[in-house]
Length: 285
Length: 285
Image 1 (cartoon, rainbow over the protein chains, first blue to last red):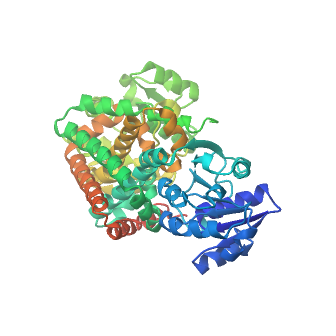
Image 2 (image 1 turned 120 degrees about the horizontal axis):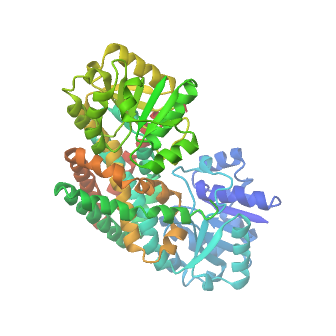
Image 3 (image 1 turned 30 degrees about the horizontal axis):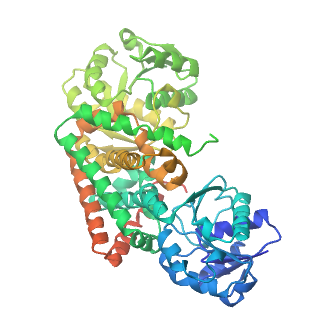
């Protein structure tokens, strides 16, 4: 089994590691515009060999795990190169633009649009970890536009590495993910900014911040190169979620200014049901 | 050694567990207005006996770990009851109001104002965990107003359970903690609200939210009974931090609306230095 990973970072690299665990016979080839990433991935055993775009016809799977703007230019080129049995999937955090760009490609049926909901705030080949996808959700868009046999091949692979499958149309995906992922990133980045701006002496932050702050601001470590094109592609949805978030924050602030502590209590109490929602995310617990 | 815990929840209960670990001979008494908390704490071994306010004169340590509004009324009563060698400390997330309320108490020198920066989003006796304070910071305010011998006694205990000590005046404490703790809680609560309001079908949240959302929204599980009085007591500082946060969010939104993706990239890149700040919080790593 030949696996090609284009863009060897956290997502693609972890995918390679997991595939090698369930398919020890697989050979993993890596392609990356950054030669250091290739070197690093080889040294870490994340890939077996450096690959070439010209050899994609020999691939069983091609995983495109690059920033979402790069995906739009590279995907059509990848589809041009592949063989009739190759299945290509892309793993970015926006799905509508990528589905549109390949929509009329003659090899559209060799492509499956996916969003594995997994990751950490780190990036690059050294961020790749085994087991990242175990128990995680993979959202698949426009599944009916992928050849039946190739759907099956991809789904078998996703299930083998422990993923749950959910189907969604790309527009709904982009709308929903703005709330549960893109907004979280902006909230963390702006929280980090607010605190950094205020605290002239960073030692104060070191000593007073606890695990709560750390948890809330964690995503502010994320890669700007990865996130800028996500916000660009999902601009309308992200602006809408931001406006709602800002409006809720303003309303909370007004309750404070008016000293309506009963209403503040009730606001928090009603959001407390997030406990059950988060518990629902880990049905095995 | 007699330890009295008034308010047996996450903070007081964990303190009791850690003190018993380092002082196995200590007897821990618990006082709580909620009889179920007393029962639960006894069953879990968090306390050895139920205590009475009338017996506080026999206490070596009294830990007041109640919501910060309750602390204002209970602390003078506690000080009235204690013996000359008893040291009382309070552990809430605001320090100025509590320092003011005991300022002229005849037994002010038996009191030490502390804020152990430790906790989880859970509450009640069942949330108490051993080792919670290991490696954490304890901020002590107005240390010079505590009797020297009793300062020493308290500091020895805090160090024995693994805490680092930092000194701060109560107003600076309340100002800084608004940024690194209180604001995080509001950001999490309002993020939870925004998503809950939007997603009519909660199943969508279960399936699309990953560890990033979970981390950012975690503090929205926190107790409204504990947090409402904190926001009340620190209102002015919290409103100020909220205004700065909202202003930063609005500015980010404007950059999106104007499609200034270079500026968005730079915003995120400059906040990325939070990595080093967060790493600095764990100097042992």
